[in-house]
Image (tube, rainbow, N blue to C red; front, side, top):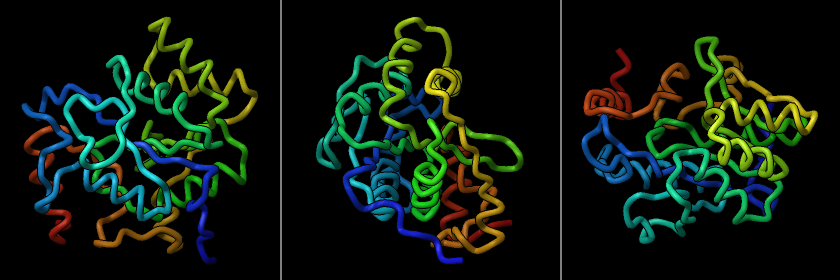
Length: 219
């Protein structure tokens, strides 16, 4: 089965979430280099290669030279998501944290395709049987509920996603990355195994592992 091209027009927009404190890394994760390029450049490239116009939400440093930046009050990833949704007119918004440089572009394409086919309020991947919060495809109609959750300080992103899905009467769709890899629908351009696609680079040790993976060391 050939993977449909799901992106590339105005009904979906892409955002890098770059508002974290980077406390475990000890420096701004957005500017930490992996394979000679900062993480923000890796994730922006992933969004663009999937056919999405890419912007940055919630940056703590000056990243305007990489892509347009959507300012937000600095209330964490949910704040960045709300600011991004409020800034765009697209039906769907795709969110990838700046510390997830191993996500393959084809996975984002498939998540957007799946979101359109199912009408889900939020679409996320799972790995090793566990649903992940990101990358996430979120319908713009979820903004009011997400904003309420943010202002009430009543939960993180996944709890806010669940609340929005319930209010909209739409599901949260979960897509297993292993199944996509096994049937050949989504492959990593560097051959990184599916179980590593959603790995976060939060610490110097994580960065060392990511360097090994992009260099083809999968042991």
